[in-house]
Structure formats: structure tokens, C-alpha cells
Length: 121
Length: 107
Image (cartoon, rainbow over all chains, first blue to last red):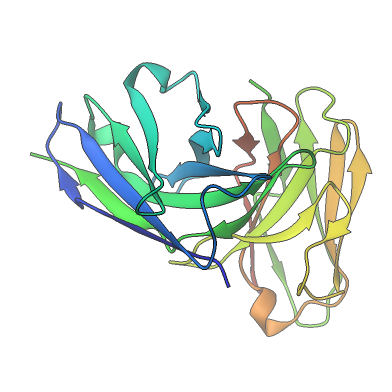
């Protein structure tokens, strides 16, 4: 059974960089047919897709965050990471990692439990 | 970006009721529409993909329909474990976008 587990700092100061890691177990990040996404949910609000990375290493980012986002993969540890720079209070959210099944139809079939990141001084 | 809207934003229903939730896309997305269920403090769970395909392990009381811009999620007979928030998501083009959610609570 595939499992995803987010980890990282739960409190980040404004203007600093948010860093999270998603450890994948029960499957390989290098498997074809999947991509690996970060999705966030501000308190009481809807879900926002941040971006993803494919097994090839190709990345796609939400244009609304593209200038501040980097998603990378560490195949030796079977994990992928998110960095979001220059954070503000608007970046406070629960951050989820998820597996995307592709090619079409594309959907998120496995999710981590989520981790709350608060941006505050 | 493709904008997703849902109606209603919330509804109250009783166990055994038939419940229908609507999702609308700002442009045609063919059948590239997924539905998720989310309970408080938990990650979303995939229910329906490609508008009408039931995810493995999901109860048959959930069904989806629609294509183009208008989609529906139907719960045929609401059960106590179905009280949750339901969100639609388009996978027609990036950035993938989600609807704002429909909260289903107990009448």
C-alpha cells in the first residue's frame, strides 16, 4: 500500500523560505505513469494545486506561484520536496503531497495526511 | 486558468436521502473531472475520476455524470459516514483547479 508522509517546519517567518519533504513508501518515485504533486489548503478554504514533478524530472508549476516555487526529487531517498520562497501570511495552509496518475485521465489517488505551515513572526 | 464552481455551497440532509451536488467549469473540460470527499482534519479521498468512473473501493452509492462544463455527483442513499465536504477538480489543463467545496451536514 502506497503511503506518503509530509515533514518540515511548521512555523516560518515572513519573507523566509518554506521547505517541506514528502517521503514515499510502498512504491517508487521512479515508476512511470505517475507524477508527484504538492497541493495546499488555507484554513477554511478550498484546495490549490502548487505544482508537480514527473519521474523524468520535468516540473510544472501553478503560474500564480511559479516565481517562488521549486519542486525537486531525491530518488535515493524516495522522496520529493517543496520550497516556497518569500512567504507571507497568505501562504499559511495545510500542505499535502499527492500522487497523480497519468496519462489521462489524470487524478490524485494517494495523499499524505497533510502538514500545517503557519507563516508568522 | 479554468475556474470551477459548485452548488450548493452547503446542504443539510438526512440519512437515507438522495443528494446531488453540481460542479461547473468555466470552459469545456470534456470528461476530465474528478470528485473528492474530505472530512475535517483529513486529506481528500478520491471518489470519482473521469466524470463517472468509480475509484476502487468506493461505495456504489456514489456516482458521477456530466461532460463539457456541467457535472454532478450523486449519493443515492446518504449514510452517516458520508457527512463531509465534496470538491470537484478539473484535470483538463494545468494549473489543475478545484471547486470551493460543498459541505454536507446532518439535518
